[in-house]
Length: 309
Image (tube, rainbow, N blue to C red; front, side, top):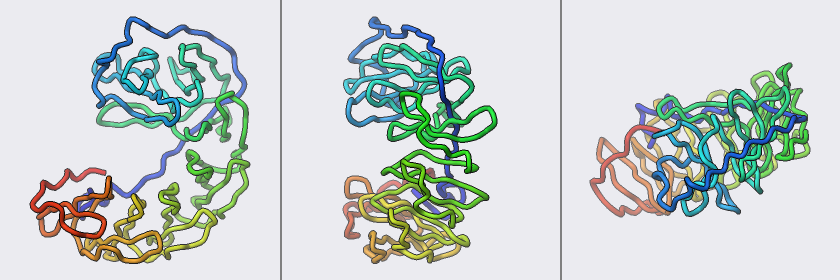
């Protein structure tokens, strides 16, 4: 939910990260068959859903404050012993334990990186720690000199990003890179395909990436074309083909556009949110309602969500 009160803290802030290379093998058997249960702790602990094999990281905030792995039934398949964990894909997952960085398999056998490290961020409220720059089976790492690289899950150097000041996780085959406070996109070969010409960028959603120039927002295609020009003081990421935007400098008067920039729901609203399953909640003068993607009211006088991103 975005409101004129919350917008100042809810504008998307990029995540930054680091990385690793050649390894020394150190094996730890961390599987705990006694802990496997069909009634594993609540879904509030779940962090990262993973496509394909349906194994995902979870954070055991109630007991260990550590990370482990669960399967799609919610059964613990790798007990929570890691300080940080990334996205599990094709049998491996990036992990951090006791300041060592590496990759674990489903049995907990871990290969540690030498010298290179993952960067992390943390949730101040829950205490959860996240490995940044980890997606599409690539992880951003940093060497002892602070240079950036992408490694694959076999711990091979895939992309040299040492020419950049920062980088982000891959999404739809592209990753944001930063140099001298300007943002662009590289592909999986490391080629800069969208130039370093933007004050800020977001990953692609529904085929478009939000960009900003001179404190105004617009949207780029994957080819770098400005599909929607930078005419908004606020613009959300697209969700289910719609984004809510505002041309008002004090972040009110929201309305919804489609991926061609056409106004679909006029509003204006004081409060707005992204669509999920064809529905969202909007508000005007403190009164909130649920609407569908045509703007038709589904339910009146609903409770306004808390002012959080």
